Image (tube, rainbow, N blue to C red; front, side, top):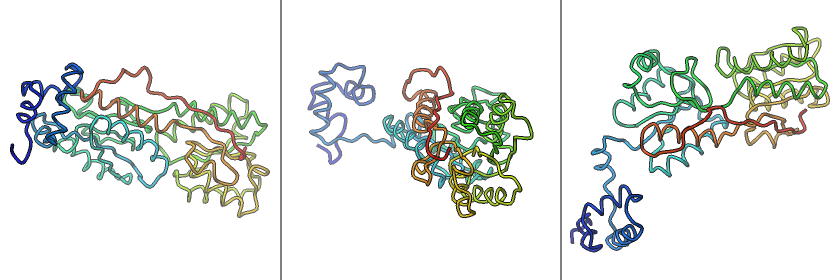
Length: 336
């Protein structure tokens, strides 16, 4: 026997043809359980391992998926990435995680992985595609890389998307505050022109107007989804002649920074101002006071996104999606 066991060695030990061995290794579902057991016992005896690199070359696959994240240090993405990795591992795929740092040029450079054979498809968590690729997708739908957007939709949604209905989620958050008797409700928004920001601002105004709380009750402050921008918003609020009753923050990180800075400035939450966040990151339940928030099913979003991409690549078949908008839930804690 050669130093490196071959399919022929397995064939001889198992007493089956090399074609049967190949079918068992690559498509085990199409052979009988008895044959599968016989072949796999022979594999164990020989210590055979598949030459994955050669197999990938024959199939013209990288057996890897690219995941583009706008800020990998943001804890929001951790559960999504975990969900993606779980599904990818089950499908024997490598996950290449790339931090774009919200830089269009970095995004374009990473997307070249789809053309140079380093990745088979991409999951976009940054809500951005280069204009040239957008145009290719629109004009040549059968001749572009397989891409799925995740959480943050594209401005022009030309690829499948997995996420939540952000406008409805924002409406839910503000309606909760209104139901608790708050009227002067300020919204601490995300980055200007960001698709999530636009949707959540729309939900905020929609809920306020539905409760007949017009412009005199409404106020939007600009943030950037960071803890620091929550702290900056607190300084704005502390300098106001009349502070709001409650604040709806477009994510938990800003809410946590806001609560901390307000507390240092002598304003207690929720006694003086109620605060609600968005996302339900791990720190939301451990901050003081624990944060009321909108829970996104982040792990489920990651898993469903990976399954969608893998299905589109034809690597493994998953049930077709009925909807790309996954369920949200209000998590009520002490901050409201």
